[in-house]
Length: 220
Length: 220
DNA sequence: GCCGACATCACCCGAAGGGGTGAGCCGGGG
DNA sequence: CCCCGGCTCACCCCTTCGGGTGATGTCGGC
Image 1 (cartoon, rainbow over the protein chains, first blue to last red):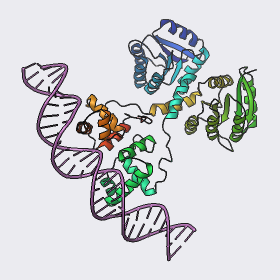
Image 2 (cartoon, rainbow over the protein chains, first blue to last red):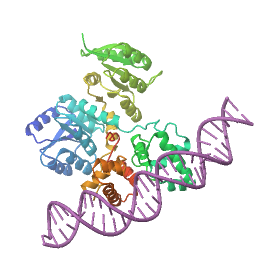
Image 3 (cartoon, rainbow over the protein chains, first blue to last red):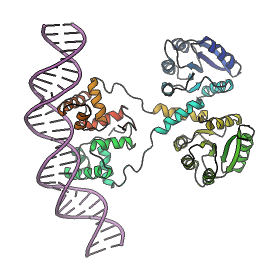
């Protein structure tokens, strides 16, 4: 039989046993290993091919996040599905970043758990409803280029603002745009005045806060 | 009966009918309205109390994203669940940002759909596995506070750096920390020197680029 | 043709910032 | 004990910056 090869990682013996029972009831799934901590899990991953690792996030001797990071590093094809008691915001994000393909809470219904295992094995992801809400909040916060943060600026002033945001001094700007320094100062003054910014320092902050420049946009 | 009050929004008559059948089979759910476009949906939301709006993202006469934004604005208690044929990355993010509580693809199984409706009605979220993967990728990309970008700074200097990053002038810093301006200048000089930054403008850029401050952390 | 918006530049001023040097004070470790 | 690192402050110097005022030229629209 060639079901989805699953390893259980949880320090509670009892929980592992019940998970094994639940998952084995699904004919698509084959529970091949179960261990009590992250260190052992990594050893198993090193030696065997696994499709999915079902891991508790809180464990003695190497926590779930660290173990997840290591597992995805040494076996990128193996998917890690976090399973925990709480949908703690910080842990969710940490786990996802470490490379987890899903995050379920332990109140998941057996059928949904089995389905989640199959989902992540097929390369997609699984999120418990409560966790999804957390993640979505995070997404809502992120980027979003705000138009209007440059309202009222003339094209030339927008150009000047871009250079201000990148930390250019007046003399650098005048060199780059082939202008006299006095002219640059005029433009800078106009920009600061129109946007109601105290100085070029605040211009930089304004740029980042409004997503007018973002991480990694300085290479020039 | 007081089930979850649901409205269906989709330009395909046939799909609305089948959705109605599927959802009505669940005794927790009551399909109270169905309309063919976003504009009509908003009208209904204005006049009736709804728990969940199940909306197609592509529609003539006001697309799903715009309609979602409007609905959450006028009826924050009403949850919007997007339902679409594809898990188009851009649309997913746009929908989430517009305020959607979930995002399902039309290949969802009936039972899962009904469950998703109940999930969002209870305030959590629902993501189709394929969509979850997209979202998780996005989360993985985000910031991540980089430690080490402040290497070598003394505690006092780190504190000074934080204020620099928020655009404080030397005199403001000296007022906030109850120091002489000369002292502040000494610290600022040390910070700029240790981090190899030309001036306070670059200190701000350094802070944002390394995730030492993020969007919306200026309130002080 | 006139006027307003934009861009260009000039000159002046005072404030703020960056750099150098030196010095006193404290606390912990060799 | 002394020395060193961190924190504090002082003075001096020069550059950069922000702000004020005003002048020119060009373009497009009324």
